[in-house]
Length: 333
Image: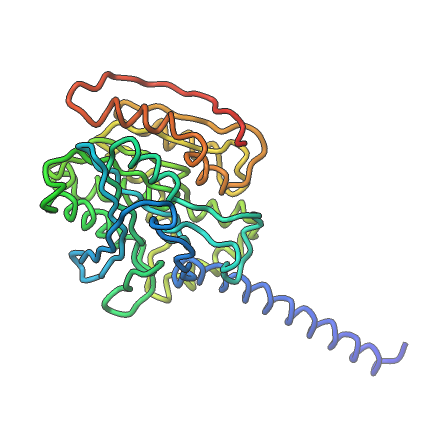
């Protein structure tokens, strides 16, 4: 083989390697953008589609973001505030409207059926879109989704309930799915007096997650994760370890009901158990067994509301008993 041919082959190999590297780095940019510029999910359904009477509400945060919510009034004395995962909306998650990365799930995630169970049990329910999601506004400065500022969404919706003429003085439970449960913990860390004075008495945390470990369990190699982190910081958002749930779990001041699918491929179960162990209050957990998609746990209360209703019934009053323990859960039907 002559020198000219070797040079051509060598140049082609270098070009292929360069294209491969650019492709890999481009994919890490897509992953980073998923968190700092999340795809907005549409409102495929609303509570009226389930026969629920509701109000569209707008809520202003302390830092100037307008949040969109659905308020559904129940006949009882207590309120449940529902927050959604990253890249979801107050409706849930529409498979037909996924962003650039596929979840691999085969049907929608919906939060309204859980809300309906709660309303039928007497609870009023507020479901809201966090900033940069659904129908809510973005940061006033025009920057990316900033995880360390988003806890203002929680304090705003809690204040909205505590100041509402029909809801003031009622006990409040926070029901957070995935990252919204981290925001609930963050709010308890940064504004404990506001939440306590507003009547927050219970936390339901469904699969709180570390973004860093999500990257790892999503299959990204270390150099891609570091590239995604650099992009995140360059765009003006904090690095993922700055909002690791373990930084905030120890500051939770209410009883906790924790839900985690053991077979969730995107979670680190050791971290999930560490988060659970870090809660300093009365706590109980359901560990969903078997091979499951992560989204199965988000839909779980739709078909199995009893454990949630039992927990709320015990803790949204002044005579709640102390209960601590773990439980396995039946398979999803």
